[in-house]
Image (cartoon, rainbow, N blue to C red):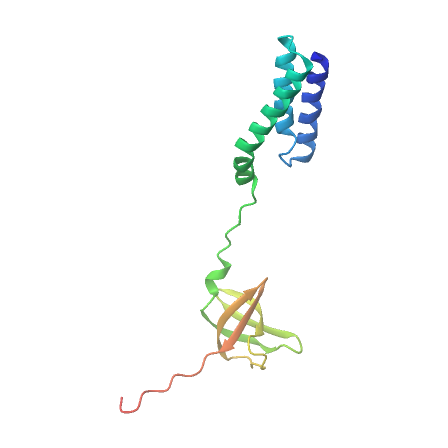
Length: 149
């Protein structure tokens, strides 16, 4: 049984390395526990029990940590800093076209009208939202001075 547990530990480790799913590594640890029981001349029942218990404990104890560490991290691009900012339309925005571009933060972005209406070049707009690399904008209404000011 010593060879069985040794081969099982290696097979589980190779499967884990080839998949990186953090699933079979726990069974590799359990197989090492079964190997230890076999080295101490434990009965087959004891070896299987060691394998099952150690695999379950390793899975329960370390799987949450492994998932947290291997979770993909969001890459901050700071592209969302243009949200709420004003931009100048450099190419007529027509969602039916679809055409349109705005200049903001030193860059030219593809743009669409958030309300669906065409927006002519030269208009000042406010960035409402971003979808992929397109900005959805709405015209900035000219501020009128308050009466009596």
